[in-house]
Image 1 (tube, one colour):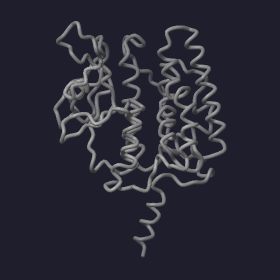
Image 2 (tube, rainbow, N blue to C red; image 1 turned 135 degrees about the vertical axis):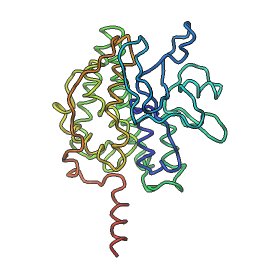
Image 3 (cartoon, rainbow, N blue to C red; image 1 turned 45 degrees about the horizontal axis):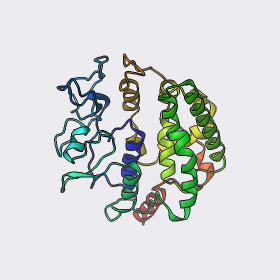
Image 4 (cartoon, helix red, strand yellow; image 1 turned 90 degrees about the vertical axis):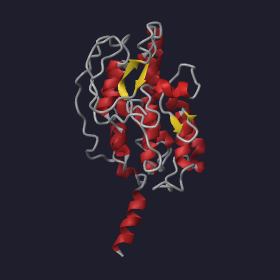
Length: 314
């Protein structure tokens, strides 16, 4: 996984929320994209690289910057690959996407899946006999229509909307995208003023999707992708408290690495930030108090902890 990528990070968060880290191991790539075939001058592909903690710092693909190999990195100990691209080619997939997350089958030696939504669904139900929290259902059947309706506006206008802003190739395309982002944020702010989660009282995969974009919005997207219609912290109080609420779920904070998030975006696209300069920004305490408990409903894992406490006190 890449801790910087909202899609891969969502899969990792689901792994933690379900309590599957003891049966499904994972590797963590360096946040700064590298030339994946540096020995071939005609192959200009840049992508995710595996490194060990303490390895020599990396520069961006143009040679600018120095970005350390920190303790959050976990190398590929299964195949000893240097790049995520190597995994795809080992699985005879040379289409060129080479994205994360990647779910790898150690026994068969191939890729099981690389679509974040599919992996979320697998983690949600296929490993429940091993899960520490099998009771958590990110895809509740009774909320299927609500989740699909929410996804229809959250994905194109928020999750993908920020990318449409950042990689727009014309003023017209940017103007449309940023208008969509602003309208969708207003809609989400209004929705979450009335209920705790996207689909009501139950935390679902749509909350993972929304949270993973919102938590990156102020530190990265406002500056880097020019989504400066406002900041979550200053202009969207319900969304800001929502971010803190979800961040404080048991296991969630382990999936959020703000250093990797900022390092990836600001160092991996030379056409947007040639010299790989990372803005300082300001640290926000996501572990601070919030008001979401007033919206009712308990966070994932809460009842399991309560029952465990009651059982232990007998």
